[in-house]
Each structure stands twice: as structure tokens, then as C-alpha cells.
Amino acid sequence: MKGLNDIALITSGLGDMPVDWDGKQSVLELKAADYNWRQMEWWAFYFEYKFRALFSNRLTIPGERFDRVQFDLKGEINWDLKAKAITLGDNNVILNDKTSMENSIARHGYHGEIIGLCDVEYDDEARRFQHWHTQLKGGLSAYEKKRKSRTPTSRRRKKSAALKEVVFVIFEEHDLPKLLTMKQGRNSNGLPRPEKYMLDMAKLDQFYHKRLVC
Picture (cartoon, rainbow, N blue to C red):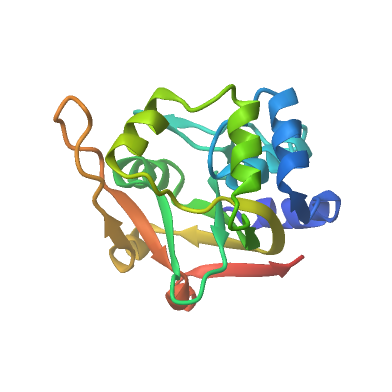
């Protein structure tokens, strides 16, 4: 099976991966690197950023592009990086564009996902982390202002995260019908957004995987 050497290489180097991520410190680090530091889900991008930095000399980063999707990294196969908050009752991990994953498998026989499972801590009632992040960005974006005009409340931000486990999953063509499908609605131009595959972590045993506790 292709991808097993990638898993061995990555596993050997994960000891240098930081596991406790303070929101302010992490956002400032992302800002200094000009890497998605404005994003609400900063912790998911921090996982990507640190992973890419850690393996930049050992894997091809980014991976191959199929249509509009460029995968995060490539060794023997393409891999995508996903961070998932450990939430009771929510086992689904959104993967990527269905067609792009299918093309990746068609080219190499296999496609991989690297999922970082994180224990997250939410902002306090006063939303002090959110206010700090908004001030750092120079105020609300046009998108946020538009969203706020529709509804004054928003999801509470994560102010810290701790990486608890890294899960490697390898898919073959016959695995794809076992995955869920996520429909994304339409773009602003009215055209439908591409459907994505989604993995139910409760059914992980149906696929080849390896779990690494951090």
C-alpha cells in the first residue's frame, strides 16, 4: 500500500510538533508568517502551518493540484491536513472536493488524510479573545459586518487548543462509497459549490488508519 512510508516518516518527526497552542501567541506567530492569521478558526490553520514547517524538507509542500484544489503535501501519495475539535456527538470530519480526491486516487491508487484531533477551550463570556483578535485585524471585515447585520450573535471563538492525537487515514477507490457527502450550497454567482467527502470518525475502522497519541 502506498503511503505507509509517508506515515513512518511523519511519525518519526512528530516529536517536534508543539501540542499546546495559546490563541494569542499562535495568532501572532501566524501573523508574522503571513499565514491565515485573520481566520476565526486560527487553530486549524496553526496545525497546518506547523505541520508544513516541520516537514518542508522531507515532503513536497504543497502537494499536487487537481482543478481548484491543491492538496497540502505529497510523499508517495497526496495528503490533506485537517484539524478537528473533539466534540461530544460530532464525529464528522469534512475532507475535500469529491472530484479532486477521486482524481488523486486515480493517479496514485491511494489518497491520504492527516487529522489532528484537538481539545479546545472556548472564549469567556466577555469574548475577550475575540475582541483582541478583531482589534489585531484592524476591526471587523466587510464579511463580518454583513453577517452581524443579519444576526448579532456569532459562534464563540476558541482561545486555545491542545493537540491530543494525529490520525492517518488512507483511502482507495473502493472506500469512497463508504464516506458521507457534504453539499455546500451555491456560490455568490449562483453556481453550485462542489460537493465534499466527509468522514465519520465513529466508522474509522472501515478504512486503513493509524492513530498516534501526542
